[in-house]
Every structure is written in C-alpha cells, then in structure tokens.
Length: 416
Image 1 (tube, helix red, strand yellow):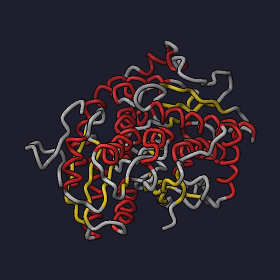
Image 2 (cartoon, one colour):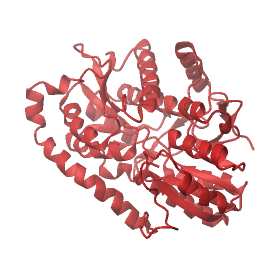
Image 3 (cartoon, one colour):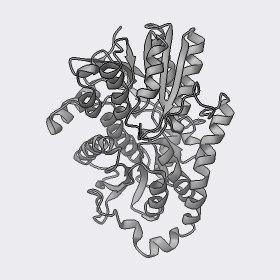
Image 4 (cartoon, one colour):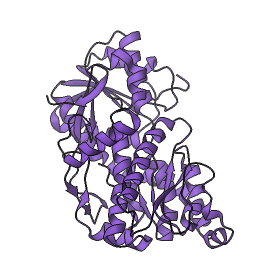
C-alpha cells in the first residue's frame, strides 16, 4: 500500500462515525473550508466578467463561443486519476449536443458546451466556478464526477443563480447547498439498499472494504444499515486510501474472516485492485460485489471480473425503452461500442437541460423554473419513461437501480 490502510480492528484510529448526523457534519465541515474561500471569490464575479474571463474555457474542450450560442458549462476530469470517467462523460455530452442541435437547438438557438478540466479535485472546482458563473452565455452547469469536488463549486453557482446539475453525484448531501443545486442521480441511500439486498441473497456473512473518502464512508454506512436489517453479518470491515497500490494487509484478514462474499464499495480502478488481490494473491474464490461498469475495470480485472455483480442504472443490452434503444444505436454508430452507466447519465443530463430550456426559455431563470415545474423529463435510465424532481430533495423521484453482472468480459443486466 502507498499509505497505511485504516482498519478499525487493528488500529485505534476512528475512521467513521456510527451517527448519521455526525457523518453529515463531517462531510459538510470539510466542504465548508473550501466553500468559504469559494464564496469570497463570488464577490469578484462582476470584476471577472468585466475582464472577459467568463468566456475562457482554458482550451479544455470544444466549448462553443459563437454569437447567439447558448452554452452549458461542464466541470469534469479530462485529466488526472479520474480521466477515464471524463472520457466517458465527454462522449455522452457531445452525442447529446449533436442530437439537440439536429432537432432544432434550444429556443431556436445552437446549444454548445464549455469544458473545464478540474481533475475532479475540490480545490480546482472551487477555483474555476467563478469563471462559469461570470459567463452569461452559460445557462447551467453539469458535473463533476465526484460529489465532494462538485459540492465545492455549488456555493458559487447558488450565489449566482446558476443551476448546478450534478448528474453523477450520488452523495445524499449533495443538494444541501441550496435551491439551484439539482441531481437526477440515484442516491447512495438507494443504491446501497439494492446492493445489500442482492448480497443478502448470496451471503450470510460478508467482509466489506470501502474507499476512504466522504462518499465511500457515507455509502458504507448505508450498506451497513441495510445489511443489519437483512440479517447479514459484517464479519470484517476496513477502509483503504484512494491511492493505495497494495491492499494485501487489509484483504488477508478479510479473507481469513471466512466470509460468504466480499463487498467493495469504491470506484473502478480500486475495485479491480481489490478483486485481483483476492483472486491472484490470496486465493479467494467466493462471490465478489464491487467495481464499476467501465472498460478500465474490465481491462484491469480481466478474467477475474467474471461473475462480479454491481448496482447500476442502465443496461445497453437490457433496456426496453425505445428512446434508450435509439441512444444505444446512435452511440454505437459513433463510437463503435455500447454505452454504459456513465455515458448514459452524461447524455441524459444534456437532454434534460435542453428539454428544460425548450419548455420554458433558454436562460438561467428558465432552467430553474423548468426543474421546479416540469413533470416529464425524458428518462433513459432504469425502465425508461419520464421522471420529475422531488422539490424537497431536488433529486429525481422515480429512477430505480438495476443490477449488472459480468459475463464473458462485459456487463449485462442481472436477472437472478
């Protein structure tokens, strides 16, 4: 390991609070330190705008700047450790914009994107947010990949009256910043209930490892809560640092606890590291629940990925929704492969906002009004159809997770 993993069985360090209130407070406290500096920058927005900084997308994408173009700002990891996700997002975004413009644009005007590479780092999100807020051509912002990074930018967008559409942000606290912060992403409270329920069908005793960040700790608490309700015993648990390279010290006791299954709550690369360590180094052959639906996970895990089960929101091969099937066909034509969960959520984010702009008007005020009133946003995830927003939580009301399993080197919908 690059740093010592945290194991509450072998150290005295407390990694996570059992109190839901404390957990939310820790998450909010960390973000507040970033947000305070960010809000100070909001006071400079008028000056920034006068200097023309708002129109600069730092060469980080194909942002449209032609007169009359309506833009959506994008904060995402084009580079850095999460660049794999940025690539998938960009494919979904660009395909959606092409569709919107082919269908007439927004309010008869061309829709464009202004990309900002943040590496999904909270400090970079906070630093770049004033540029987007000052750019009057931007009617909404989508992103970032990680909820903590996104939340560092939200106070600035809230202050500017600019909708922050965190399409990938599943942390239940993400929308707490204010009424201009929205997400159609399924929350980890819902994801982890589904995860714990499928685990319970395969195991009575489990070892659980999870990524040591705010998202991972929140997700683990939700899993643990539902596992307890299901009567599933967690015989071992440990967190690990995001940049870990050797997880043997925490996975040896995970194996030796003789679980019926091992559960990893993390991202794709670390999910593959956990799985490969268990299979190749430690001889574990039991069920595994973890990883993400990315090419990176499948490539890293190789044959070890066979039979892995995860929670997701979309299956390119399993969807029965007509518009989702058209999306799959269009995506495959353009990129030569099927889209996954991350591509479809990015695609849907742009379609959602274009639908909002065309239902009301392509302005910041129009987007906010539509999110508050429109009840038929086109839904590509889950079972398809349409969705609307819960006005209290500002999350989608009726998107449900699905289960995916790896068969023959690809994720397909799990029907067991």
